[in-house]
Structure formats: C-alpha cells, structure tokens
Image 1 (cartoon, rainbow, N blue to C red):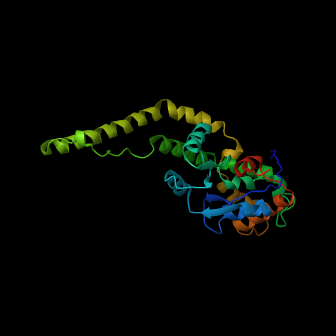
Image 2: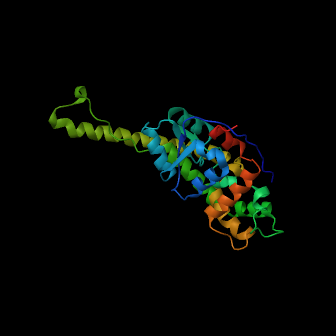
Length: 258
C-alpha cells in the first residue's frame, strides 16, 4: 500500500482564520491540526463545537466570517461535497475522516511503541476485510438518509392560501399527505435504481474513503506495544510529520498553506 507524501512551505498571513471543527478542545482533530501546522498554527483559531451534524447546522446559519467549518467527508461523493461547499462556508476533508491521515505506514512505523516486524499494510487489509459488511451497512444507511434528507414539513400558509375555518383541517391534512407522497417517491427511487448504483459506488471506494476511525481503533492494538490514548498517538504522528515538513496535499490545499 503506497501512501502519498506531500510538502508544505512557510507562509505569512494577516488576520487569523477561524476554523470551526469537530470534537472538543482536547479532541484528536484539534491536537492533530495544531501540532501538524507547527509555527503556522498561529494563522488559525480552532473552534471545536461537536459532531459533523452540529457543524452542518451551524454552517446553515451563515454566521461564519473570516473562516469556515472543516468537516469530515464521511461517505459523500464529489457532487454532494461540491454542492454544500458552494452553498455554505464549508470545507470537507478529502478523506472520510481525520483518522485516515493516521494510516500512514511511513510514520506509524517510526513511533517508539511500534512493534518491530509487524506488517502494517497486511493488518490494515485484514481489518478492512473483516469489517466489509459493517462498512457497507454504514455506507448504504448514510446514502439512504442523505437521499431522504429531513422529512418535509408543512410550510406556513400564505394569506392567500388561508381557507375558511371549516376546511382548514382538511387543507392541512392534504398538504401533509403530499409530503408523505414525496417521501414515498424517494423510497421508490432508492429501490430502483439508487441502491444498485450505491453498491457499485461502494465497491470503488479507496482506503482514503473508508471509515478510518474503526480501522485505527483495531490497528493500534495490533501494531503497538501498550498503545497510548488516541489523541497522544495523533500528536506523536503529527510531530513526526511536522519535523519532516510534511502535510497531506489535500489538507494543505484546504488550509491554503504553501
């Protein structure tokens, strides 16, 4: 398994860019980003506010100035990512989630608690194989929920739509029924042809687009002696990368460094 490597250069910046990210102040996300950036970290202010859904809701408020929400890609395809990035102050990771950056064999094997001689690539491959059904189920559930989106609510009646009081309930029930029909149509679309298309899409996913959090949770116990906490591992990996002046090229583009 080849893990591509990229390089970054020092830059100068004016006002600090606000990055609203996932997790909390001591989360893996914040620790990894700040450590990886090194002295460039002072160009940014990281504000973790919780889950990816929380970030999406916050982005929808359009209250973000001089910054953006940095969100896990999850199972979104390119068109889904582009649609949201064009509409809101959002930048999605080019990988499924931040833990995908940890699956870098070059740096994993340099950690002091790495078990010498363990084949990291083989372990990753075996974990992915053992979790195939789990990942497929998560993928299809994500796609189905994303397609259904939020259940359509009854919009407020305009003054011109207001009926006589004696038929108000009938009108509201009619509108509710129309919403059910909309969901019914979406379900039929899932059954044919979307579900089959999603199977094909899943089969073509690269390791960068698989849930690395679950992979890494098992991997660390297989390749490390007495593995520390995940945020400590994230910091140690980021320190090695920062020392090499290395940053994943996709993340470098998002942060606009170099």
